[in-house]
Image 1 (cartoon, rainbow, N blue to C red):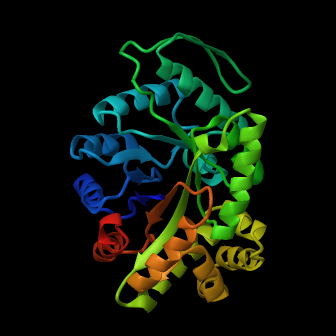
Image 2 (cartoon, rainbow, N blue to C red; image 1 turned 90 degrees about the vertical axis):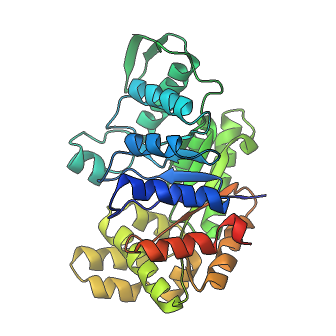
Image 3 (cartoon, one colour; image 1 turned 180 degrees about the horizontal axis):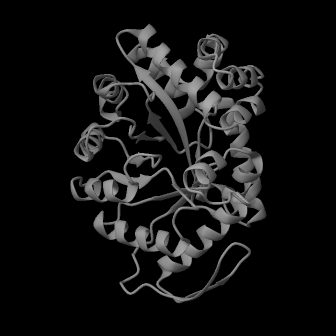
Length: 334
């Protein structure tokens, strides 16, 4: 049976308490894991600590902590601490993010994101083992680091993001899980093939890599409003957040993604929205009436190899629209 996770909203949330309340609502609704983004608002570690203290059964984790703004040793310490604080319910989500975030916001050279992610995962695993860490890599050299607290038992899984075929293949080789976004069901199937190829190269069983497909959802009685909120969300990410999302859609055969990106970059926001047609919106997202959204989510759950669908929300959705959607597609609602 496919898990149903939730990717918590963070944009314009008024308080830490409001984010925790969404997590508690997800727990009551039967969601399996609450994933917390870390972008340009509150830091994820502090909020995850509050989530851990005020929930009991739902798994929690960041999706994602980037591999540049914290050292691998600190990420290992953080994972060990949050595993303790959550009584074993923590899952560590890592990824390189992109140059817009890393270079413009954090002032760090982006370099080789795949190598950095791989070495970060290796080091975090060694930290979580409780053994002394001596590591000589291309990106990192460590000598003598060791946890001064008990190593977590069990160690939390380390899951990574990645959008291109090579990045996903690497996830199949070394990660405990992979998070896919901006993918249609068919596009997710292609990336699962990358996971399988990577697992084979790493002499691993592909079933050991937990595959989570993130799906932007908006389920409202006003179906057209739900669709427009979702259309605005997709256009913003394709047009305004670098080239990764544009490239992900182009790889899946949606050549209009280039035009959407170019129109957005030229300041032609309305044209970008017009270029994002209903076919692309329906292929990529689950937006409309509650019944329609539940049916669209089921398309992802039917894909062989997907272990979890993570419900996310349009960035412009307000509290009522978020809770309507969360409740409409909650596991306990069906």
